[in-house]
Image (cartoon, rainbow, N blue to C red):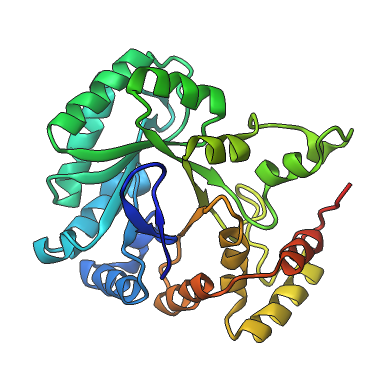
Length: 305
């Protein structure tokens, strides 16, 4: 598994991470441990959590499955700030409280990376900075980032936090890539040219911030996956063709498309199927050509101006 630097830090991480939102569906800590071991065998030692996944149960069952000996071999990232059905909360009190809860459930004394899950328009950035400083000084969190944030929001936080934001987790796939569409349709009067995120892709490249791609197989937030979907016949045909060429599966091609981008995007995959994890991990050994990358983009129904 290829490694990349996380943002402008010295921390090296695998370019594919495992999202743990659905691991409670495996039914037992033993099954979760088997999934973790499979991921580790594939070089995937990075595990992405959030305090709201299964109302905290995902962190808890993961903490049970991971013993002390394994903990130092893996990288744990978790997220906080969503209070479901209530609000988003970047207050110092809530961040500190959330981290304490995650540490307890994960059965660990430190979290490698903490992300703020969704932008809080009522945030007081000096409070965020105080929370980050406290957590860093106490050794409870190593690095910090955000999820679904635009450049202005990151700039505001970094201004107060001493440039501690090194990750932005964003939805990205071949069929859902607004952050790429807008950059390819500059000065063009069409929907694809609408800049909905402030040029976050280029901003992160300039600032040395790692983009983490979530939902790499989805074509919308809730619509479903494009793999094997009749709505994307040309895309699936081409993915199957490239899968045969590179001796991998179509889901590996979908991830390889993201990894091919020179922004060095880390892809977070959320499968709980062990064989699928093995298949997806093969994406790290595939480097699509420029022509293949663009062909997949066009096959997803995109157009070049």
